[in-house]
Length: 86
Length: 123
Image 1 (cartoon, rainbow over the protein chains, first blue to last red):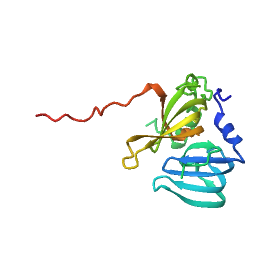
Image 2 (spheres, rainbow over the protein chains, first blue to last red; image 1 turned 135 degrees about the vertical axis):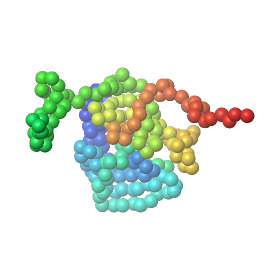
Image 3 (tube, rainbow over the protein chains, first blue to last red; image 1 turned 45 degrees about the vertical axis):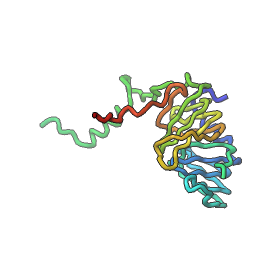
Image 4 (cartoon, rainbow over the protein chains, first blue to last red; image 1 turned 60 degrees about the vertical axis):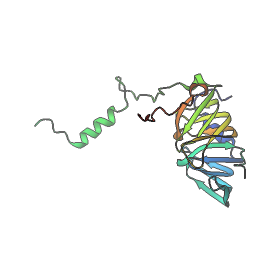
């Protein structure tokens, strides 16, 4: 299904709009939220967001409303992900 | 003395001729590496910031964004961020940002070796 080169990735992320997504940053931070939208730079708008810091072994902040997540530090996007175990 | 061009002229020259081939057409941004030979194969990916993952390559684009299936992330030692541990976690279907990728290789194309840079003490 994905074996053509080309805009494979924006298409896949587009399918996730409206569902839960788990974002892994370059550092030890992870974000889980409902994807509302994104742009060409993969900056993302999320809502009902939970932020996880992995090293201190614990959940950090739960934010509602909406956040704009800067795409500069995003490493991985996991559609339907629920976040790290904890 | 005849070769003192105004800065403006230099800028205009560069605008016309940068990224163009001999015919003066805009050169297409070509990838120097074809990832299609890795499709459906297990690959290892390293990221800026030290993360490492491995998965089956399902898709990619010219910006090096990747789609990996059955992805596992290799976790680093919390005390020594340069050392990999045996710990892994399953991530499933994952999109990897090309801006963050620093290395891609086949899963069976690398192995850990003892540190070759450690000096042996004499006597």
